[in-house]
Amino acid sequence: MIAEEIELPFEGRTVRYIASDEVSPNEIAAVFGKAIGKPDLQWKVIPDEQLLNSWLSIGFNPRIAQGFIEMQASQRDGRLYEDYYCNQPVLGKVKLAEFAENFATVYFQED
Image 1: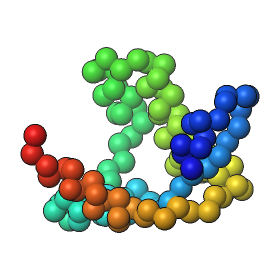
Image 2: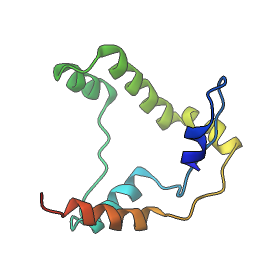
Image 3: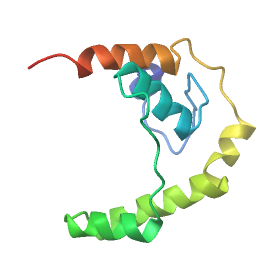
Image 4: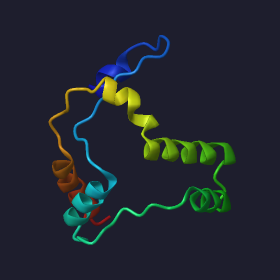
């Protein structure tokens, strides 16, 4: 599906949602933690101001950093997902747990 979209000519703004799983950040951390042998891995929420200051301190572009902060806020209050939930796609075949297993294989490879 993604390859189909990439190959289309760009003609204005269109949106096509592509998803395989709908999981929370806590579920993502748990699945990846289990896959890499860190079952206590947690998703930690960092306050917007702290995250912004951290990014700015390492030289992040201020405009881009602020955009990420605004995007996070829209995730928290649900605005980011409004259109997605009105236009939900058929979920793909590869689920998070399967992807995490593949990720773990690469994660543990030695260079």
